[in-house]
Length: 49
Image 1 (cartoon, rainbow, N blue to C red):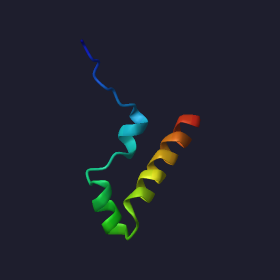
Image 2: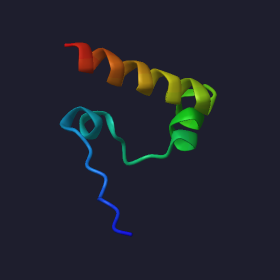
Image 3: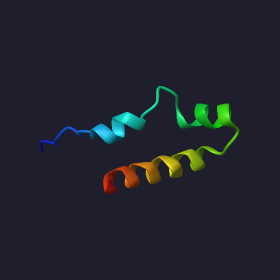
Image 4: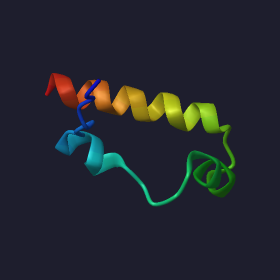
């Protein structure tokens, strides 16, 4: 069965970071799930624009 390669939008690549969620969380003193939630919210808001 052939699978297609996942393609990411420009919006996704714009907010992607070189650091992992855990590294970002440690750097800013928040829980990693908060950063994930903020990232999802930012992607949703960008899609609406």
